[in-house]
Structure formats: C-alpha cells, structure tokens
Length: 451
Ligand code: ADP
Image 1 (cartoon, rainbow, N blue to C red):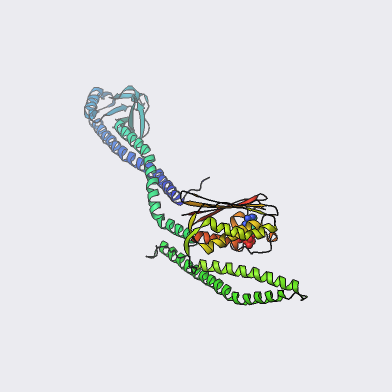
Image 2: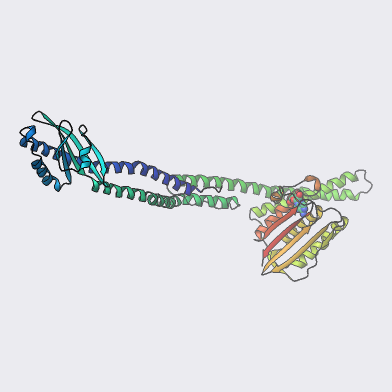
C-alpha cells in the first residue's frame, strides 16, 4: 500500500478530532434545545392546570352539580388560542367533562406526570394530575400540541445530519492546507538534505531565525553538515597530500627496479620483476587517487577544448590493441565521422583507457569488444560493449564506488578506482553514464554528452 504522507495523516487526525467533537456536542446541543422548547410547553400546561383548579374550586358546589357544559365552554374559549385541551376524570377515572377528542379520553390518567402521544400525525404533550376539590378527587388531564416544536426539532436534526459530512470534508481540506503550511519548512529541510546527500556539502538549510523547533532542527542540521564538510575536506586534503608525497619515493623505487631489471646476471630477476610490477601498479593507483581527491576538492583545473572524438578513440584503440592481441580479443571500432565535443582531452583519454582496459580485462580470450559512437540532435552517444564475464545485478549498483571490486580473482591489476574516476570525469563534464550487464554474457557502458 502506498505510504500516506505526513500532511494527509495530520489532516486525517484533525478530521477524526472534529468528528468526535461533533459526535459529542451535536447530540448535547440537540437535547438542550429540545429541553428548553419543552420547558416552555410544560410551564404552559402547569399554568392551565392552575386555571382549571381555580375554576373547579369556585364553580363546583358538589359532585352532582358539576356543570359540564359551562366548564367545557369556559375551557374551550380559554384554550382555543393555546391549542390546549382539558379532560376531567372523576375518582373512578370516568370522563366527566373535557373538550378533548376520544383518543385522550380513552387512556386512564397517570399519576402526576408528563407524557407524549402521537395522534393523527400530531405530537401532543400530556399532563395528568390529581386535584382535590372539597374532599372530592378529580383527575385532571391537560393536553397541548407540540407539533410545531417537533417539526422545528426535526428540521434541526436534518440540518445536523446534512452538515456533518460538509463540516468533516471542510475540516479535512482546511487541515490539509494548515498541515501543508506547517510542514513546508520540513519539506524544504528534507529537500536540502537530499541535495546534500547527492554530494553538495556547501548547501545549508535557511530556517535558522527564531527559537522554535524548526530553527533548532535547522541549526543542528547545519552544524552537522559543517562538521561533515570540514571532516571530508580534511580527509580529501589528506589524500591529495599523501598521494602527492608518495609519488617521489615511488618514482625512486621504480627507477632503481628498472635499473636492477637490466642486470640479466642477477639471481633475483624474478623478485626485481615483482617489485617493478607492484611499483607500476602503485603508481597507477596513486595517480588515480590524486586525480580523484583533487577533483573532489575542486582543485583540478579543467582544460576544455574542441576534440575530434573518433580520432581520439581511434588512437586509444590502437594503443590498446597490443594488450588485446595477447588475449586474441578483437576490438571493433570504425567510425571516421568528424564528431566534435568540448571536453578535457587528457581526462577523456583516461576515461576511455579505463573502460576499454576493463572490457579487455574482464573478457576471456577470443572475445570481442565493440566501440560505437553516434551524434543525434546534438547529443553524442558512445557505447563500449564486451562479451565478457558480465556483472551480476547485486554488484552492478556499486561498481562506480571507490575501491569496489566485484571479485579480486578476475585480475591482478587495479584496485577498484578506475570506474570511480570515470564517474567523476563524467560528472565534471555534465555527461551521463549508464551500464547494462548480464553475468556470463557481457557488459555495455553507454555514455551520452551534449554538444
Ligand atoms: P578495477 O580496478 O577492479 O578494474 P574498476 O573501478 O575499474 O576497478 O571496476 C570495478 C569493478 O567493476 C571491477 O572490479 C569489475 O569487477 C567490474 N567491472 C568493470 N568493468 C567491467 C566489465 N567490462 N566487465 C565485467 N566487470 C567489470
């Protein structure tokens, strides 16, 4: 599953929080509203009850004299406006008067309580209470329509239900905007860190003002990069100095071993040869290290000039044929087109030597190395392909790393610096290099450079 970004996660949490708050507060507000609307109706029922009790106190001289018609007339007139009806029951719960319809008369009185009933699509609030008039018990029922309240509450309920998804969607959208704004410095920091990781140690994070967490993070990150840059520069300078210093004693060793090799009568010829071979190997390593270290410290002055690419490759191939012949490897290159590129000739000579030398080293006897060049739409492509041992896919991503060797047993020369140097030369010329390889089938390096 695709990873959810931090800003989406934050807005989801924010939306969940808003949903919880709505779940708590909407029912509470609904209940409070309902209670306050009902309280008003209840107090009207109570008022009416007092009026009924007043009437009964004054108008009833005795049970048998209860004047139903007069009471009904009185109550109907009074309650008409208020949509209220009254029912009077005697002690045996028989209706003795009232302007209510039969539905309200059928149900026996309950003891002093409010209750609700639904008839003919109308909602009613009913109040039942016993009243003693001159030692005679009467059960009084006051009824009021609460249909308008129920309708209002229903509208409010629908409003709440409809507004919840709208509020939640808006909360998510707003949350996303806030999160994006809040996280912008973090994204900038991550982008800068990625650029630094690619090798540009001169970059720094800009959010250093203030005392908030972002400023603290930026400052700590910048100090760490300062430290790293300093340490790496010192290490690179050390490599430059060390390789530089090693060149003189090595030149002396080489000179003496060359001289010693000339002495054909010596019993130590084999040993002299080993010393000489190793010194040659060391010279190569040291010069590659020096070039790499100078390159990384930007101490290498590029000498860009217009170079005829095919001519240059041709002369390198001719030099390399000597080695190829020893292994019966056929080097194929025949392009005389005048392709002109702006490059540092000595660096690219080194680059082609390294790549062709590898192709020859890692291709068994009677193999084949093919070199092709072409220019299309101002892009020059150079392909160096062999049908040698190939590189397996686990090692392939690492071959450009310094001192990385797939397998020491393949060869005796080289220490894994050749391709690092190739990579550096490619980078300083803003060119590109790709490698395709299959173990046991061969390897293909593809270089592209814009004119
Ligand atoms: P080395 O000095 O070992 O040749 P490089 O940096 O030139 O160092 O190459 C790194 C590794 O990449 C080599 O050890 C080798 O295993 C592999 N490699 C490079 N070129 C080829 C090739 N043409 N065919 C097979 N393997 C290669």
